[in-house]
Image (tube, rainbow, N blue to C red; front, side, top):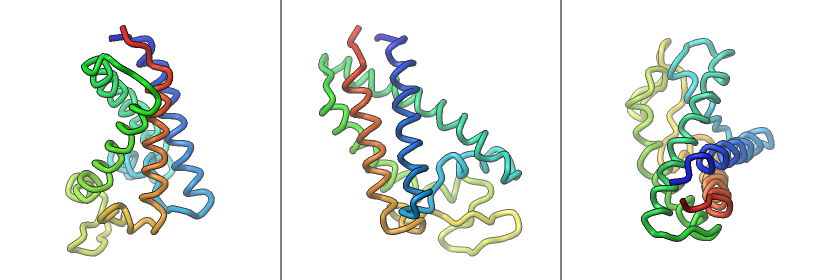
Length: 158
């Protein structure tokens, strides 16, 4: 396994993926902010939450870069299109399986079954994260595909 390549390209791919998601929010295409969502898991301070969430996003990006590298190494092949397909699969797992579970894990997120409370004032993402906008799944899939494409294009097998 090529650890320097994982660290470098995992960092770059995570920055690009986060930038795509932030741009979709800034352009009004989605209301989802992964750094804010993750950050509010660690702190109730809504002003500092994006900083903690961004650090958590980078850490998770590196963890997933190691997972992608393990897959590439097990296949003994790496290419941009394999990375893109892996990224799409990753995006679908996030949207279909993980996002609906988030309200059960997040200490400050309302659930699908109960409304907001004083300590739980974040809206749950719901199925495909559609509670954050109809175009949210599209941009999440694009961002994950680009993440995979970057790793597949620039990761070098050990």
